[in-house]
Image (cartoon, rainbow, N blue to C red; front, side, top):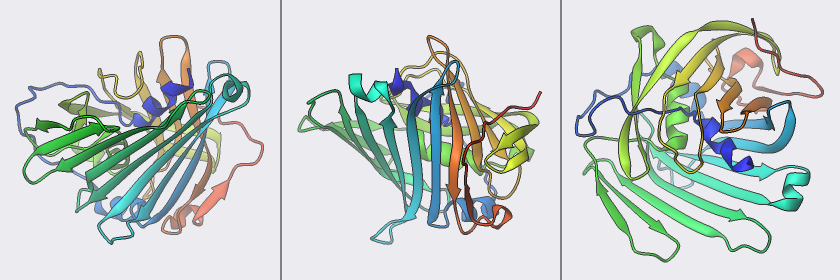
Length: 279
C-alpha cells in the first residue's frame, strides 16, 4: 500500500493524455523567478505520508542540488516506510533525476528499489536524448529498450517540479511526460485559490492545482491527485492528496529548507502540528 505514495508526487503532476501522441506541443510556459528559487541548488522537503484516517505509513524526502559535474541539477526522491509497515514490507527506494537547460528537461533517470525482506535491489536506468528525441531504458542487466518520441519530455519527478513554476495566468498548461513507454501530454489545471490553516508556515494562501493522469507509472492509483502550492515566489507544495483504490493518501510538508526562498526565511521544521485544508 505504501507504494502508492510516489504517485502522489506527481503529482506530479498527475498526467492525463489529452492529445494525439504524435503532436509536437509548444514548450511549457514558466515563471523564471520561481524557477530560479526552486533550482537554486539547495532545496529540501520532507513529507509525512498517511493513509485514510490519518494513519502514517511513510516518509518522502525530496531534494534539489547542483550536479557535481556542473551539468544542471539533481532531483532526488527517497521513499521510506514507517512503523508496522516496515516490519511487514520494508521499502527503501531512491529516485534520481538529472535535469538541464532553461526548462530543466531530464537527461538521466535512475531508480534503485529495495522492497521486501531479503530482496535484491532493482536497478532501472532511463536516458533521455532530448535533442534527437530518443529515450532508452534498461532494467538491471536486461536488454536496452529504445523509444522514439514526438517532442521533448519530462519524467514523473521533473514534471512535478516544473509544474510548480508554471505560469497559470495563461490558462491550462500541458506538461509532456514520458511514462509507460509513451509520451503523454499532461493537462495541468489551476482549480482555484484556497487558504490552508495550520500548515508548516501557519495559515497560507495557496494555489489548488490538479494534473490529470490516466497512466499508472511506477505505482497504481485510482482517481485525481490534487496539491496545494503556496501562492508566492517559492510555490512550496504544503499538501498533496491522491485517491487510490481504497481510500486516499495525503502527504503533508513537515520540513522545508531553501535559502533562496526568502519569504519563509529559508526554511522551517514542523514540530507537533496538524495541517487542515480550508473550506
